Structures are given as C-alpha cells and as structure tokens.
Length: 241
Image 1 (cartoon, rainbow, N blue to C red):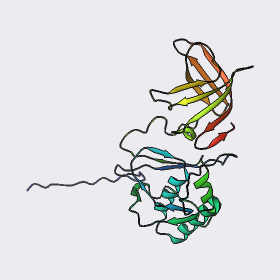
Image 2: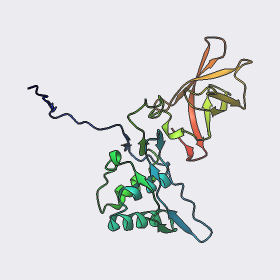
Image 3: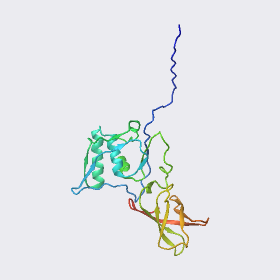
Image 4: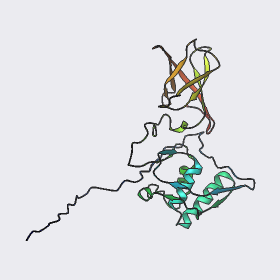
C-alpha cells in the first residue's frame, strides 16, 4: 500500500502577509509659520468630513482634509474619537463641522492600524491634522515605491507651485519658479527677474537644510550656488528657511 504524506512546515517569529497595502506615518516638529490647513467652508460656513478610500495607491499627503478623512476611516466606529475630530477642526477653523460616517470609504485592511493617535488628546490630533510636516504615505508591497515619494527636501513642495527667492551675491537677487519635481522630464527652474547669464540653467540641487540652491548651466559644467532667501508656496504661503 502506498502512503501519501503531507508535511506542513511552520516558520516561527516571522511576520508574513499576502500582498496588500503598506501605509506609513511620518511625524515631525511643527515649524513656526507653516500651516497645512486646506479646509474651505461652504457658503453656510460648514466643513464636511466625508472620508475616502485609502488602498494600494502610491501617494504622499500632508493636507488637513486628507488627514481628517483618513482619521475618520480609522476611527469611524468610535464616537468619542469623531466628536474630538469635530471639536478640533471647529476650534482651529471657526467653522461648523459635519462628519459623514456613511460614506463607503475605507482603509485597506492591512494598513488599518497604521494611524494610532492617543485617545482624548486634542493637541495630538491638531498636530496630526494641521502640521504640514506630518505626512501620510500610502502604497503597497506589489511594486516599487516611487523614488522621490519620501524625499525630505521636496515632500513639502510636492505638487505645489513654488517660487524661490535666491541671493547670488551683490545686486543679484532673483526669483526662481520650480517646474516639476525631481525625476520628472520637465524638472528645472524658470528664471524671473535678473538674468544670471545668456545660458540656461538647470536646477541641480536645492538643500533646504543648508538654505542653498545650486544651478548648473545647460551644456556646460559651470554651476552657480546661491542662498535661499525665502520660498513662496501657493499652498503654504511664505516660508522662511
């Protein structure tokens, strides 16, 4: 008689999961002058928090609307948490907040517990919602993460219209409009005001920690380094490095 033997192997202390979402949170100190509030009350003075779908998409969010929607989906079955959400937004914006829990939104099951804020702490929730340096990243473990998704030098400017005022020396202060983002075909500056030379410059580096910007002349190895005086962002207003 032949016997068919099934052997089941079990690996210990190794976390395994089927392919799914891979969300993460980045918390950073709230810098003076920065504000990630993009709630816009309607004509009746109401703000609606409607939730959303957070699945496998690769994205980086730091705006208050998206973070409030994510919070709603995370804690939609906890009335005390939702009441705190309403109170914090109303206190910060001065508007009336209406929360919609019957919205069909969700957080992918594999990432549901990613956001873990302390219960009953309005300051922690305010910081999560309105600090633009606190980030929500969504993605998955099926394909590679985009190369510049978490670049700390660019994340606060991602998708925004940005003009950088640069001091290149005596009588040479110019505005540079940033076109695109690193890795994009149209990534580069548009020079406004004074002309550095007759050549065209590509944006080689922008170091927000050192407050410098480096332009490289097209078709040559010549570079020009200047000091960042200020950054004007459509979304965040004027940022002093």
